Length: 325
Image (cartoon, rainbow, N blue to C red; front, side):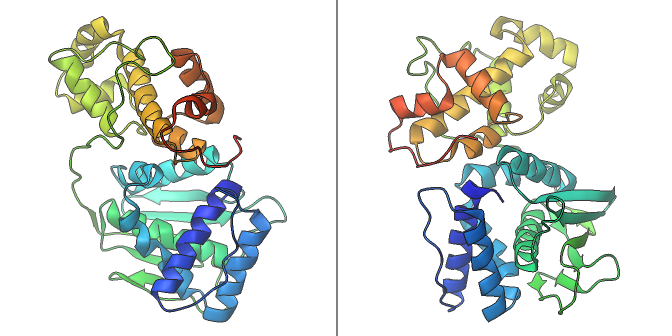
């Protein structure tokens, strides 16, 4: 992914290889940053020495990363197609050099490609790392009977019955096909961030009206359970088992649907910023903002401070060293 995400990925690769008894000389990152070229050289070196299978299996560490807000937001996807949409949004948020492009989607089947800028395609090591991560995410978000092939529909199988298999030499590792037989029902969302204060430090007041009895309180809880979802009034009404018109009327004392959603997202972002350990793009993505400018603009509108300034002023832990895109 982009420079800030590279450090996270390299740390995950190094840990997965260490767990498998494979020693590697992972590059050291400056805080959350790692130059893209260093990440690419490291992954290519791992593939040359140990093959592609260890990189495919890095995603198996994801269940241990459920406290990471980006992973939490990805795992809240209701189905495989929404997961891939969220992954694309995360790539956009982090200015990823390589992107997963969905070329075809049908009931129980998706074809996709791992692509880069013109003339700069990802190398096989980068392909299989992302493929392994998405494969495990799909299983964790309810895809049952998942089978994954590389190189197109007739390509070799790289995941079946819960087992990864390395693609043979010469496989087009950038082209993927995911098929699944069923999707498991998902539980209702629960809040994925620590409770935020009603009055945000530095704002002089809370980001929005506090939770009232009944519908407003339940709406807040549902929105806070998955702020990264592309919420609509109709979708929230369905989750609360009421009609959009009735919900709109009952949310009026809280400023209406859009204001309540904005307040919930700002509260969630404030909680993560106060924690101080997560890069700004991760905070913005996990809390449902469209991109970094949208995050900066909307958060500042409610607190009179940019996210970076807010964290510098109030974070409990020292802010991670990073650049704001």
